[in-house]
View 1: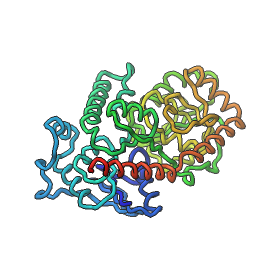
View 2 (view 1 turned 45 degrees about the vertical axis):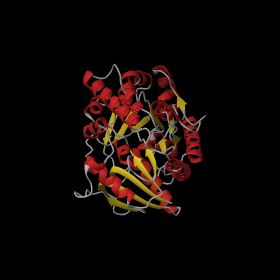
View 3 (view 1 turned 60 degrees about the horizontal axis):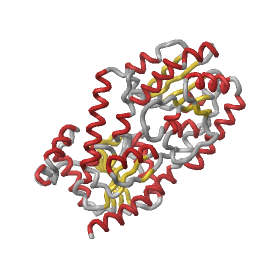
Length: 392
């Protein structure tokens, strides 16, 4: 197949989200013989990749707003999202001229690009669906934060509703996301779960600190901020009373002021913008995932499983996973359970190691990028059939 992937920006090396997902799947498709071209307005670090990467450009004579078959409301939403109508026209023209079998648009505003594409159309929702914003609304937020999240949710809902007929297939990464998306679009979607690089993320031969926990992720992302705030506010003090020597490493890029304030307490180490997190993660026998908001699949959970850490999770962290993880982690539902579970695992190295080995086996069985690419390929084939039926 000839597959086009389109996204506003692609930044490599890919660390999370739709950059990671689409890059790894494009790589797997290219390696299996498909012809893949990736289109974006902004490209960074894409000089040496195993597929074609092309920068989108506007042709002032060919790409005009008048070409688009959009309602007045749709045009206003496009402008609100910062998408120039001429950019949308240029993206549609470029895809239609390429002779592709399918086009995959990655992200919320990228859904605009599918309106007018004459090939099979796939929308990869990424982490920008209405559920992602709604889940972050909290009494613990400021009024301004909740207002912004409410606006994000309303705009997402409008986009998902007004453009719901464009995709021939929609992709989400968890069953929870699928249920929410189908509730608003009334159209079926496919769960294409993330994978993890099992060769890159594996147990490292480093000295382990038996009293250390670890958390990592993008530290300017709402669910990560809220999860850290909850753990440090509700669990950390009680855990230190039980185990005075306990330490927590918080690793990630772009720590927000909210995160910096939250981690400013005894026993917590902030490791910002670390180029390779693996040695620091593997120093800790236990990785924590105290999420209270957000959707999708936590890439960091797959990475922690691949590195053989003992995973301690909230129900939200594993909600909607396509593959059951019985025995691959410990689920904690309240602060007391968090304290008891972490204290037990830090006090029993063998139990923590067994849990980490179980997590590694689980991720090996269910979450490779090759498997994700195969599921994606099957979904694209179904989208092609639906598109032909619609065009007939």
